[in-house]
Length: 400
Length: 168
Image 1 (cartoon, each protein chain N blue to C red):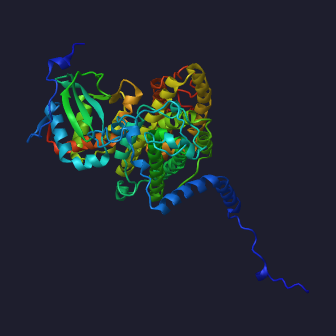
Image 2 (cartoon, each protein chain N blue to C red):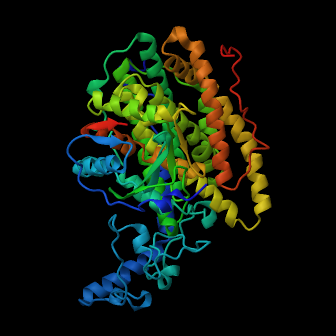
Image 3 (cartoon, rainbow over the protein chains, first blue to last red):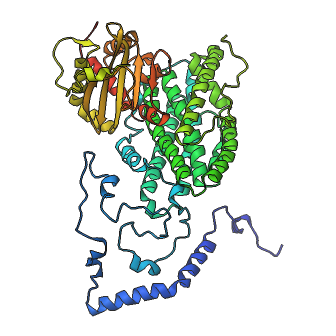
């Protein structure tokens, strides 16, 4: 053969590493399309610098009353609520018109036309994100952070029978799976919320941190107890449905009010059925975090309904969404990877799983009533339309 | 129902825990509990601040009649320990309600285990055993305070092992 081809001289096949060239070209084109703006900023600043002169325009704070008021420090330190009492900083418009990073309360009007427009900021109505407890919840979240590495008595976990150990690991695997989505949802919306709703953005950031810690602690719990167990396909569909929710309010209803409300119930049950002090500690700490998320969800929902310009229409849309949302959550919570480990832990072992299912049935009624009470508190009456059965759909009840 | 609270001392500032046995149920016992909490302040600060009003109702704690006390949590401290109406008051975010036998069993178990109760004697566990032990509130949002501050509540009850308790 006249062609000198050997294997070692062949070019490597295209890899599956992403090709960044196209994205980089788009970025360059975008930069160049604003070339005039970039040039003007740089030229103006260079001219001033080269003359050895100063602008010092930023020293003029009269426009927002600089120096006229100082926030009062409260017993907790200096909270958002404390600083929001300073005139001009705490007033939050019902509709934000600022699609920039400029802080609320800063002198920004003169520069409005000089700043880029962040098109990703598209949740501009306060009622879509606000809740009247969001600032205290943010402070509380910071104050009640904990560390899954240091604050859990991992060395006290001890040995438990294999059936209980596997049930604990399966429950932990499931919870780790769930917590990933619970972090992704606020993250998905965080970058769409404008800076004027900074209290909401701050709270959502704590929720992301909380959920990261939850997936961490349950991952560690599973691995400390023997290993990770099975994924939950039925729950994956529910988690995807949360991420795909049509808007922030509906997603918050599904995640924070309904989904996390039920997960909070699982944490409470987890503390109740825990066989070790280590597990009790884990569930109590997670319970606290989850209850904050639920509280935000309840009052965010209420704020939305109370402030929407067309409440009947908003309410009906939310009922339509809840009709689906409840079926989504019901489907998810029927998964064997959730109900069976809980039943085994409740019953005290695999041979008592029937008694555990009976116990789960009793808890179910409590969980659904708590969900409906949270809806009541939000001013959203689901009692007549709730599609989740009040009784746990378990046909093997052993109790009379 | 008559306003029992108005017939009683309205509030009592928590004072140092008395030496010797303290009667449960009594205002002195809860004041002693708050004193123990204060002596363990670093632990409570680590857990984070608590802002709520909680009420204990011992359904037969007053010679067979109901008895109640209200604790007001503010940041890292309890700012008020006060006798209360033995029904959940509007001011209370939530109320624990159980007979003396349940409280006695819990406190004795905590003491026996030096502040680490057996699994069946944590507040959350007991709260899942309605109607034996109930956590009531005006609405679910206020009831959720019990979950938001659960670790602090449990720590407080666990600290009761530092009190030499006698029961009536």
